[in-house]
Image: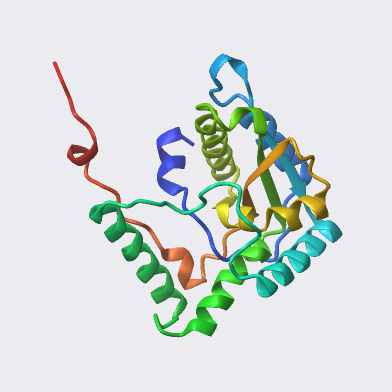
Length: 223
């Protein structure tokens, strides 16, 4: 598979099949993703791979925390985009409308929207969940970018192996619950979760493909 094909195929999957993923495959993906760009070879990323009984425990405890405290546990960074231009807002609104439309959820159905949100804490049914953290001594520099490059590399490697992913920053809303459940050290800031598994292509929500800006809108060519 060419890299360009993997990029085109990658999408955020929000419904997975109840089909196992070999731990060896996950190990291979992570080992290869570790070659992602990293300024001065800092490698600020850390990954907790969660499966089996521990995955069930993590899902149950985080769902309970989300029900008890819908606003989260004093997030340590701004998880969702703050100041937004009109164009950014329009793109975000269009994404939300498209996703809930495919889920068959009315904009005013608060209960259904809440249940859809809670589905995040089940990793959308994926058999493997990753919790990705960043070294705290890296968060005041540009090293967030390197974690992003690691995640993109991971996602493309998953596609190459016939798997799908979903990046989920919402897990950081419940960093205290996640940290306690997985015994993550305090010197690691919890950044996001990643669902890994086999996509359920029969699920309507997995047909979602966001529109992207035209090349002329974001690229300037000078000569």
